[in-house]
Length: 508
Image (cartoon, rainbow, N blue to C red):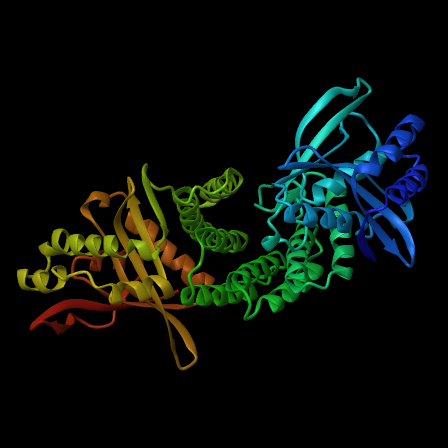
């Protein structure tokens, strides 16, 4: 299949006449055909040719120096759904982009007039990236309402494949996407599959594979979705780090739907490790936590899901993400909170920590030591233990690599917990490295919520033992939740002063 511009006016008219008369389901009015045949003589026109036969054409009307319109396009019906229309639009768009045009519009029959053939036409334009703008009820006549659609023309330096418009979907109570119109989704999958079969540009192939993977997952074709995302991931390697991370997240989403949760978490761990080594956009970072939350949600770990969704919402709110993304996260967070057995006090949030929290975490840590632990520890202990200066080299690795939660009260960090996964003799265990709250959230059942989140995380990681070193102040708290002392008070010198604590353990 090749496309090319036709500069011979009579040839344009001849092809237009032949193809439109072969399409009576779309072009059934004689006067309209006659007008098109005459009008294309003066318009930029491209042909699509297969095995020496012209099987389709597109003619463009230029309204001004910014906007052009698809005046007429026709493709022999036996060549529908084979990517011919997309190639014609792309050929016209590349030429328009080179001339500085910014928008391409098209008019077609509105959905308010029932017609199965024009239903297919609208689906084509929507899948090719056009957006409906306005309906004109009497532009043609009252029986044929006109729908105008428009798309932005990419600059030549950005031109690859014509971007697609993903079919609309909503979310069910299980936070899974449900297509609003399954026929549109099936059409979308079929159309992209045909484009993929003829596409040779590797970047464009990856784009098609990513969209096919997502569409097939929503459609329940999980084996196909996995295949598409694996191929997309392979095309991303060593070319585009962000694309690699994005496709790892998407692949994890497929494993989640397949209930292969270990594979899903392992893939997310790979994505996180790659993100820690490279700068990740805010939108991609939010997507990571959104999808991590959905894996926990499907496993029934609703507290962990809440913590991940809370961070996703914070990132999306601060970065002014699109409304649909914000609404998706809010819906998911509300459903997770509804299912979590613990209800937090008003204006208190527990979420996953991020690197920008590091200094505020340190301040909350020091306040907790100086204002809560001081009643059980000596002034010398409090001085060396609670008077430390902020050190990012101490805080940041834990936030990046460990299970790390923060407590926010009215937007201020007032507590945290930090858990490290340890391996010994091929056995995995947890070490609760930090667990502190400030007086502002004391006696608000925050400790109860945090320790239950710790238990939930250990269950998700299949860890059967938690070890920690309790402050003297927290001993009764930990004993209440089943921890046992391993020995009596012990400690290590810090600036010449021993800070005392109780080694403790709990079998889950």
